[in-house]
Amino acid sequence: MTTPEPDGSAPEDAARVHPDVARAGAFDQPYTYDVDTRAAQIHDRFGDLEPGVETGEVVGVAGRLMLRRVQGKLAFGTLQDSSGQVQLFATAAGTPGFGEFCDLNLGDWIGVRGEVMTTRRGEVSVRVDDWTLLAPTRRPFPDKWHGITDPDTRFRQRYVDLWVTPEARRTFELRSRMVSAIRRFLEDRDYLEVETPVFHPIPGGALARPFETHHQALDAQLYLRIAPELYLKRLVVGGFERVFEIARVFRNEGISTRHNPEFTMLECYEAYADYHTHMALTEELVAHLAEQLCGTTSLSHGGRPLDLSAPWRRATLADLTSERVGEEVSIHTPLDRLRTLCVDHGVPADDSWGPGKLLLELYEKTTEGDLWDPTFVTDYPEEVSPLSRRHRSEPGLVERFEGIVVGRELCNGFSELTDPTVQRERFVEQAGRRDAGDDEAMVVDRDYLRALDYGLPPTVGLGIGIDRLVMLLADVGSIRDVVLFPTLRPEPTDHGAD
RNA sequence: GCGCCUCUAGCUCAAUUGGUCAGAGCGUCGGACUCUUAAUCCGCAGGUUCUGGGUUCGAGUCCCAGGGGGCGUACCA
View (spheres, protein in one colour):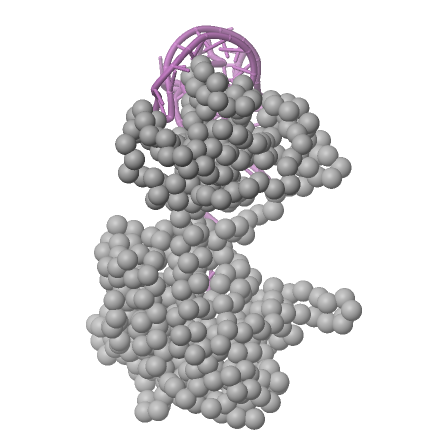
């Protein structure tokens, strides 16, 4: 049992902290270091040199010492920075503080200045003509070869994971570039990026249980948003004809390989357009991202081929489900028959459900998981789509689509319901369910209805799960591999930092 | 929520059916070494085997409870 320091910092426990902690304590850290070159640039510029060459080019590099090979009066090191690794070459004759250099610990941050050269074996190196300790590691770094495998440690101490797990670093770099590419893609199409509130007085825009919080000064109950949807549509009312937000949203639900309580959604809205427009936008965007980030739309996911190229298959929910269950089903199928089919397929059905909900459940439990190749599932029941506009030719349905890839929902979009009267009816219907105990049902949002009263033009909206898209492109199986600091059970506070 | 699995040194992993088994590699510390590539060689230190009970002559190993984590399932994206 260790005793935490008053400030919560690491206890000075000899078994746990680095043996050289005294050295670290006396360390006088510089405020800056003059870095002019990164590891990858050295390989780019000097990658083709013959062995034993001195370039006359002096560079300043910095990073962590990841590997060290001391050999008497020579020492080799591997320096890693955000771009990659480069070898360091130090000599007793030419490197000031050679002994101290050899005593560096794996994981120490150093700055090095020296001439770029190649060794007799031909490896491009920076000769350590001068060096500075920038920050010592006070804790031992993980095994240089195996790294960390314990998932818990990887997630809780991501700062270590990023150094010792190259795939982790690559995945998060890909995520960053993906978000950046999405912005460019939408901006090129005249979409305006906006930021809407995270605190919502009324949770809305999706069916989910929210996190609750409270504002002291206002003495107001607030909710963390479950979707930015209703605010973005208010902005279309306000005259922003094409808007998007990359929004962190929060849902108070279970955690799994595919669910983190906070996650990131892209939502975008376009006036004067319907759901066909956004199906086209989606497949174009996803194919574009695959090209940009992976170099191709022919990917592999979990060892299985996956082609993201446009166009994607389009099929109605009713047709796909009919195909699966082997008989024609739709929202016009008699309730009894739908209920029987649910039972036959092991789908639990609630007595209060109408045909739309029954059909949706049947589809989700029997069909969705098998849709590996990108598929737009279209025309959902009105009963389960309180914000979507009625289908122009199919009564009881709405103009809604979900993009399913590798059996999982990647996106959801629809022609927006613009009629305040119908929207009010849908809200009231939802509120009734809420009163009946469904704590994921919506509540009436009067201000949103007021906004609709001012007129929402024909509009289409789309939401894409950013985390899941990263999983797809990075070929990883868990959302925790694409979220830097996934939600975990808090560590006990009576142990200090360990 | 529920089910299954898992937890041994800083890290990665070993310990026949419960019987000197608490070990190795890396790292750390000390020493050798002028071209290494997970450098190599010699030596030292390092563990309340997640925690607490129990069974037993004897528990890392079996049982119970608790804790952390993983996977599946449910809700959902």
